[in-house]
Amino acid sequence: MSELRCYGCGAKIQSEDPKRPGYLPAKAKQGKEQVLCQRCFKLLHYHTKIASPLTQDDFLKVISKIGDKDALVVYILDLFDFNASQIPGLMRHIGYNDVLVLANKRDLLPASLKEHRLMMWVRRQLKAEGLKPVDVIITSGKKNLNFDEIYEKIDAYRHGRDVYVVGTTNVGKSTFINGLLKHYVQVTTQITTSEFPGTTLDLIKIPFDETSSLYDTPGIMNNRQMTSRVDDKVLKLIMPQSEVKAMTYQLSDKQSLYIEGLARMDYIEGEKGSFTCFFSKRLKIHRTKLENADGLYNRHKTLAITLPEIQTIDQMKAYEFTFDGTKQDIVIAGLGFMSIKTKGKVVIRVPEGIDVIVREPLV
Ligand code: GDP
Image (cartoon, rainbow, N blue to C red; front, side, top):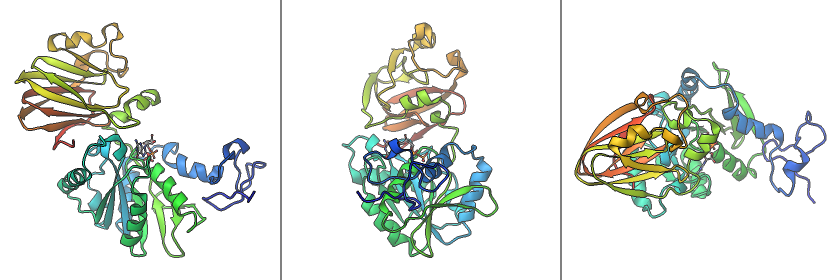
């Protein structure tokens, strides 16, 4: 059997001495042809996950340093939570460097959604944010979707320059970097950290060649997403693992939908309308009469998931929206979205600080 080497640092894999290069516990390498040593694994995974939380200031410092370089920026966004995964003012911070957008987690959206339509939707959303990318690639880190196209385009658009990968927490940046590392295993055997001048932040550096590298920048949590408010157990329930199934409710006014105990939609007044929910399959949606809705919040624990700090529904914040009959999405950041076609008034209740926005329908 040929000797196993770490595809990060190139060290020979050994299970004897944790202090020496290439250490990996024996059971972690069983049956694998490609492995990372424990150190490279930690570098890659813990740098965003366990390192002390990054402040907005630190984050902007790193991002703004990119503005001093001539580089290609690979910007990863989460298609399931597109708006909340954006970095506000990104172009300004990165000095209008070229941006290649990777719209990730395609696998979570309905397979029936036409690629061209999705692409046009993404481009319009980006344009509304003032972003003019050199290109957009729809991808899924989980399914390796369009990875060859990504590698080709990174090479084509970087013109020999460095590449910086940016994205907020949870968009799938680590998953993507892992994929890249495996892809570039023939090209490079070196993964290192480098400190960004003026900050104490480690960046992961993956050299392309003698003169240029790819840098993984630290992610930042958007605390206006529900995903940032819940513990790990609930996080697993609210983050969909596979394609979200559209659940359509035909509602008359004075009816409500609870998304577990995390959010509520009240159809206050209007014609009969259609309300299609796109949330993780593991979240139960409860339909109730508006007049009974307050009382339901957590009587007899009907709603299995609530935030512990919210005892009664009136501690949630209410946002009112008026619909004129055209289909629109209401997005609850970090939870999911509802596609609404009706003429009438809707109130959305969410924990204070969670973003609720209306946008052009995605599906
Ligand atoms: P990071 O915080 O941006 O580095 O994101 P991670 O790579 O750690 O991914 C965050 C979560 O999203 C993890 O639970 C991943 O399994 C999941 N994830 C990453 N890419 C995809 C994808 O393409 N599809 C789906 N469904 N989940 C993904």
